[in-house]
Structure formats: C-alpha cells, structure tokens
Length: 463
Image 1 (spheres, one colour):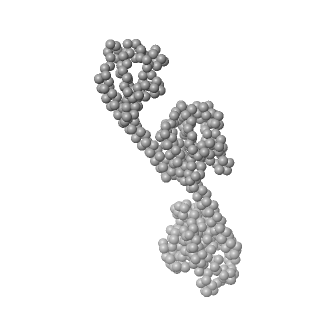
Image 2: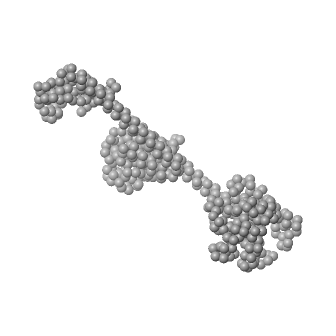
Image 3: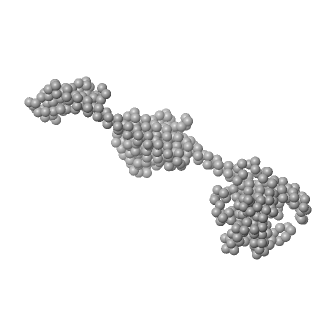
C-alpha cells in the first residue's frame, strides 16, 4: 500500500504509533482489507525508524478483551528502534558488500584490459561482470563501424539464442542508436512499453526480455559503441545501479580504445616492416644487377642460411634479423669502384685491399639505421675467420657472431658450387672436402659438422 493508505500507511506517513481496539471495525482500515481481517482482534501499529527516517511498520495483535495499553506502546517503540537500527546496519552491510563486489568487478575489467589487448577477451569480461554485478540476465556490446555509422554486435553473454548476434543498429535509430547519438544512458523498466522505439522486436520474442538499459561507450569524446543490459522481468534501477552501469561503460570504452590502438599499431608496424623488407630486397637486387656474376646468389644463401640457423635453434624473432643480414651481406660492395668489382681478371694486392673494405662500407652504410642494427652481424663479420685471419677486424672463434659464422659456411659453399666467369662450379664432393679442410681454420667446426650432416642426409639441397 502507499504511504497514507490504511492503518499501516497512515502510521508510516505520520511516524507515530497507533492503537486500535479492533482492527476490523477501525475507520482507518482500507475497505479492500476488511474481508481479510478477522473480527475480535486489536492491537498496535508501530513505526520502524532508522536515523529519524521511517523505513517500515510492524503490528502487534491480540484477541479481545486483551488491549494494548499506552505504557506498552513505549516498550514496543523501543523494540521498533532496535529493529530499525538492525535493519539499517543490515542495509549498510549489504551496501558495503555490494560496493565491494562492484569494485572487484571493475578490477576484473581492469585486469582484462591490462592483461591482454585482445578485444574479444576484454568485452567478454565486461559483459560477464555486468551481468553478475548488475543482477541482470544478459549483457552485450555493439561497436560502432565508422564506415557506415552502424552499431554491430561484437560481444554478448547470457543470451539463450543467436538472435542478438545479428544485431545491427544505425546511429540515431532505436534505443541503442539514440543512446549513442545523445551520449547518455537510457533505462526502460518495461521494455514492451518502449516497443515502438526498440526496433529489434525479435529479441522480445526470442529472448523474452522485459527490461532494458543502454549506456554509451565514450572515450576522449569519441563514441566507440554501446553497452546493453537486458532483464527478463521488469525492474526499477536505483541511482547506485545506474551509476555502476556508467562506470562499467567507462571501463569498457578504455579497453576498446586500448585494443583498437594496439591493432592499429600492429597494422602500422606490419606495413612498415613490409616496406623495409621491400627496400632491403630492392637493395640486394640492385647489387646483383651491378655484379651479374653473382646473380641468384643472394636468394640462395639467404634461404640456406635460414635453414641452417633454424636447425641450430635460433628463434623466429632472431631469424628475421638473420634474413635481413643475409640479404644485405654484400651491400658494402656498393662502395667498391666498378673497375675493381667488375674486373674480369685477378685483382692486384692494392685492389684486394679496397675490396676487403666492403664489410666496413656495409657497417658505415647500415649502422645509422636503427632498424637494421640487429642485422649488422652478417654484412660486417661474414669475412672473419675462425682462426683470426679474416677481415676487417681479425675476430677469432666465438668472438665472431653466430649468424656470421653460419653465413660464412653457406656463402663459401654457394660460391664453390656455382658457375663463375673465371671458373666452372665445383662438384659437391670437392666442395665438401674443402669445407672439411677449412673446419677450425676458416669455419666454426661445429657449424661445418652440422652443415655436412644436413647435406649428406638430404635435409638441405646439394647446391
């Protein structure tokens, strides 16, 4: 009953106790209640107060001729105050627990945002926490597609059918589109009364939803989508409930922004990486066009070096830099004059001195490019020798970077087994014999051994 109606309503409204000799004959009793109240019973109706606020009433009844006396009312009012304080403490305790759960829910969403940048995981956590802590039946997210200004299903939890997954709402249309455009949360305790504006009638039929709320997902002034809440029974959310919904929406928007920024960054990095690789391959091709006697050499040694490096145990991340280094291994020859690089006969000692500078030229050319620092080992060190007699720095044994030691074996193998203008390709047997002879001198013995095994087993091609 409403405050002011009947005995209970009048006591609640006035905050004063009321004694009735017989309830059934009392003029304050509502007509609709008379048939339910037995004759011959009277008593008192006492307001239940908490912090000077009436929160309810309670009745004490007894059969005639027993009647409640005024001095007994004071005892009843004391009991009512105790009850009111108890109720208030219970409500405060429940509110504290509820806020703790809400904080935990927000923390879970925070963990999802900080622990992953995968949009599906973030939004699934958001929907699950919204469903649990708002005590509703289902929650879903529609994200905005800027290309056609349409909100599309991206995540959902608690739905019985696949109907929600087909949700598409244009901005400004329907309740979700309206919330996005007006940038404010909307609540509909009885969804069917809002049916003309709720343009997804199939959800009412297939999911039997009765109540609905929607909050826009906004960050830095940009609308990202909406968070939708569904309940299968009517409900009237209070201020605290609406506030928590909006907090969840803020967290969700942050997660969406982070995930989308990460996806955009990944795409940009991929495009940049492709551009770098295309540039590197272009440089290698330009060098081969200049030095026609080594045509195809770069591609072959790159493939073979990667195969051997992978067998040695290098990670895929390391292999990226090995590949770039192999492609650029002779880039320093761009600094060697044509009359030396393209000379058909043997080089003089002075000319060899210039030719041996090409690893240093490579380092000077590539070192200003931070992106290529991890790939410098092969261009700079592939002419170093295990016994320290190589160039340009005379590095020895394991002072030579691993990738350069691997490449040195592959580079010499390909050179020996390929035709050159000044000689025919060596046979496989003769080339293998030379590698064995140079093991421990020119080459790392362990790498030579692994390479020979792979050649003999047919794991890699014979040239």
